[in-house]
Length: 302
Image 1: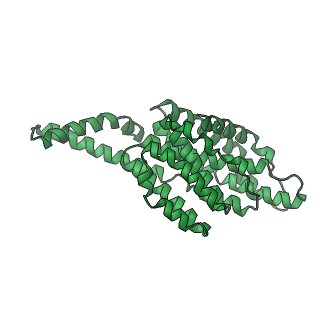
Image 2: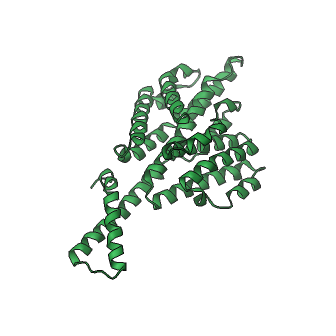
Image 3: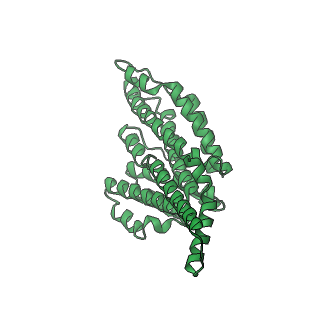
């Protein structure tokens, strides 16, 4: 049975397992064939959970791209962040809460990597409203705020706290079979990382000397290119879920589109050829940027 099929059967299996457990706990009897079938169903639930956990762990670390962006020398751009004021509207819908919790996680990582710790903590307070809505605040740890405060003067420590917290959330959601929520969170995180990266490319200062501007752009382009594997991971994460609801279906289709656009660009080949002269240009990213920005606009306006 494929993972997709296993996932679609999880609801029926969970009900069957729950009924069987209740019968046994209440002293009821069940024949051996029913017991054997229930054991198989329980095993299927566990196998699906393990399968999804493996796929989910392929999702990019939310701090990896912000660190690359900071190292590129590009100036911090606050205009690329999602507004904290929008958080109240996101709590009205689970999908919006999950996607934009992921968006805020990337914003927090970008702020932290850019040595903006207090702003990062302010954004964490905003993201907390969404994690409360999703029921995942406890999974991040009751002492998370204290850890962030302690790490205020240590960028590396703060990034580690963010990465560990996101891992705890994914593990919690997988354990509780909340696959769609976990998938949408990492989708939002990846989408925002792309948005920030592409925004920095588009907004690179035009008044820099050509050599300096090209150097910044090459590093930013490299950061964008490295996200091709992130897109592949999101496609794999969303694929078994795309038939379960309209949100996962939409984001799956858009990330498949992005996957094709990255493949057509042949980033790896162009980066290898980029020796002795600047070849990669912001215009190369026109189609990818249009897709990302359209999807991001929909996401932060949900």
